[in-house]
Image (cartoon, rainbow, N blue to C red):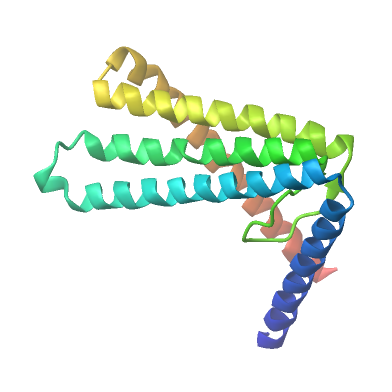
Length: 188
């Protein structure tokens, strides 16, 4: 079983290296102005990732320092951390649209499929919209929490509860179906 995991990791690593090579070759084939814009976007994306890390560290610190601070700052900091992912998603989307290629940067995790042309542009327009919506929702949640505006908080809490409930139910259902399928496929 350990050999299978090592082979899988090697395969993932090879896939990531292949993706990096595809991206590098594609960027090299672009005009100089596009290459320059991509370099600047990579710097901005790194800065946005740094802001996410800083927001996480701040929220974590405030969570541990709860006795010496105003307790309302703790959920506000965590909501601000959640909102911090939106700008990174928007920047990656702008970079991908300019390059007409996705992914414009290689993020940790599972290697993705390299897509160019209009397919990359349209999917990243959707990502930008989702990133803006994500930022707006969590920023509004942080503001409503900090200001203790219950007129805003009540519907947002209800909405979040409903979404989480459906998400957990869907996850459970998918897990049950997957387990059943695996058991049935082994018996036949």
